Image (tube, rainbow, N blue to C red; front, side, top):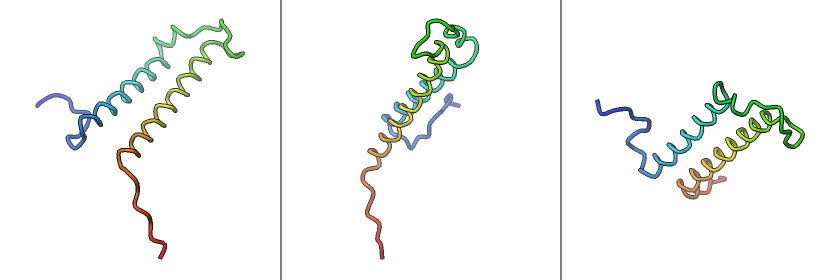
Length: 89
């Protein structure tokens, strides 16, 4: 056994790095949203945009997750190249 393999051997080195970075981001995002790391951000004060700090932190993590997923989607689209036109006959 050669160790843990998260990705298949059919992926290029760049693809493994990108998917690995996304995986690490989501692991940190998950860890930041549950105990014990959430206790670092679980504060009512200061109010940010009228929200308690903990709610603002959760909103930031959700928006960051969306942006990471959107950038991954666009990166994968660029890797595939342009799609061939569909025949309408």
